[in-house]
Image 1 (cartoon, one colour):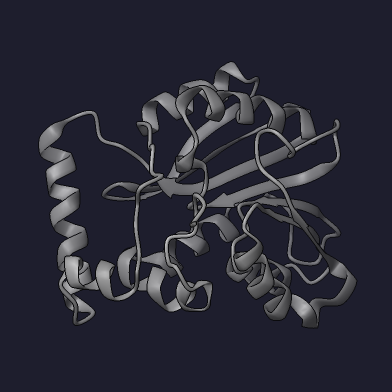
Image 2 (image 1 turned 120 degrees about the horizontal axis):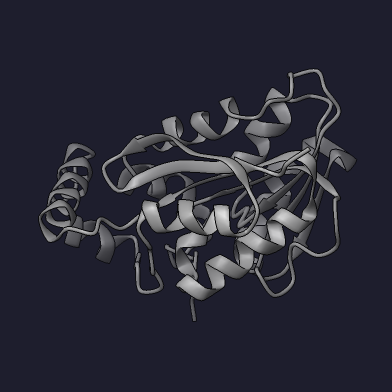
Length: 229
């Protein structure tokens, strides 16, 4: 049985598969990686929630060569792929199985940066709010949280527009959406996105300042905030 975040039955096809159904997937990652205040040569300690197969993890470890990452996911299958992909980075990356907000983050003022990609939208509204509070607690003063994720429009016609955009994107990759989902044994059964506006409000309520959205393409967005100095 698949878990939330296991979009595809076979985790080995996650990377090519997700690029076929998430428009501008690499651009979303770039927005996350371009956002940190730290320079590329700085020693930063990073928590990644919902690391999946380690695709964003590998990009971050490459872009910030002095960084260390705790990569967390609850899927054994996804983490098996991540271990293979991240082996070359040695002890700069620690991989742990766990859920959020229940297992991670834990403790206070540990991380300079917390990131997540296409994972938080699996949580309920209450779970998102609890997670944002836990992340704020886990950051060092001046630390940042950035999330690249699916968001929901609070207008039916914009939701319809986004659905059509995704269908056209999948079609541009040579598939019809229903055929793609069946062929790749994919599903979005666990999706529970909230509006971007609500999540920005929840970040402020959790204690973040400098809360902002830095990138958006239809119903995909990168947003975040800073823990005060």
